[in-house]
Image (cartoon, rainbow, N blue to C red):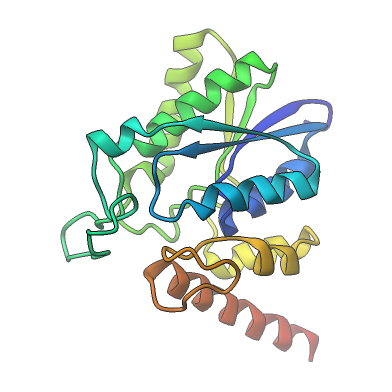
Length: 220
């Protein structure tokens, strides 16, 4: 893969930034694509652009605002509370999001001569998002190959690792401090360690605390 090109689905968050560093190590050339779907924190797009600029990565932003018209949710509507009732999908789930994002990433990838697509979806931290499952990604990979008659490979470096292991991977890639300080995971739009209260921040912090404890133990 060292001689090939990849497109990374990039939000500027912990997971996709770790995947971006992973892709830079794996491929000769890397581009990033970010989707504007009128997300709750518009800062996400600016954050992604800033990271891509700092790393010297070509960055494309695609307008996906139609998603907000079709599927209003807590990630795009400030008047909707972020909730996750037992037996129901979280209010932050956006119907069709990863299906559309990966499909449009594939169109872009083919146009720029890349057959590799990298995404930070993860089944280990599965939060009730059906489009983060491995079976979905594998199914879509086949569908995209058939629909465009092109040999795409969708890579999911984080699929079977949890948040602590994601922090470990960023450390192994030499990107731990970068990811910790410059990424945006927080639903309330606070870069770095975030607000500490929303579900995304709590998941990120729990993983960070676990990894730091493990790293400290390994160094003793």
